[in-house]
Length: 356
Ligand code: MZD
Ligand code: MN
Image (cartoon, rainbow, N blue to C red; front, side, top):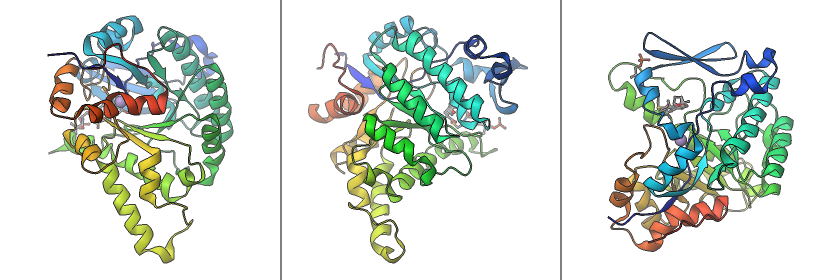
């Protein structure tokens, strides 16, 4: 089968164990995210919180050598047919559940410096996302400016905001303004927040997996209904690993609410929620056939494919098989939009060597 070359809007890098120990003073490094293994399970400690006990087999299944070594990663990308990829953190995701402002700020900065030199510095095919504080907007704005001047073209936020800082809260306003001013997208990744295992017992694994995409829907609803995206029409947001098929349904529901509950709606928007969503909201998926129908039948064109390398939820090592199953019967312009042009529109042009 001919190789389908694509760009990917979602992947992860596994940070070295000693990243924060080498970068931060001991009083902070001791509280940075760290994983310990015992009795076949992995426990992650973050500033005194114990937040994850995954069977090691699960964690190890997400650690092909390319997860930690960008040069090996490039070999995997070439073999899988992925040209450029947005790279999210792994352990640094846990900065989003910290409660200490200084710790969150310094761990994020250390990650950003490491990713800039050790990942993005290896190849322009890696588009890193800068971790900014979710606890303090001034810290977040300062780190966004520092990261952008260093070469970052995107910032990361969790789809689950900290308690008391919902995304419709005006406390975030300076960050929205700064991202719009810098003309860089904000990438909200799912699976953040302190606990992903909300269900136990029969069906638990599937229920928990589905639960992780609700915060993405909530984030879009908050940022659109509160007028953030209306106030900054150039600001783009990306829902990473959330799937994309929910977006038109959410847009319809928000239009219905905006119209039928008009007497309660504030702020009034200059455009219908769906118009804002269809122009400024992007979302990535890995395997969903319904995501393509969303683009072709429902006209939501901000659908981005993502590999989620190296995670189990991703397509590695079967990316070409997945891409052929998804796109072999799809018009070339639609395939190109979903696998290359959307990425280029949001993250800057990265043209794969061969675009069939
Ligand atoms: C980033 C989040 C994603 C998820 C969570 C899982 C399935 C279960 O009694 P019990 O505790 O053993 O419960 C039994 C049960 C089978 C119900 C439960 O263990 O649901 N296990 C695996 O953890 N599912 C929902 S899926 O949260 C989005 C996708 C899987 C990888 C994921 C956990 C990653 C993410 C995301 O924040 C992280 C990270 C660094 O990589 C993995 C782990 C950790 C969390
Ligand atoms: Mn991901």
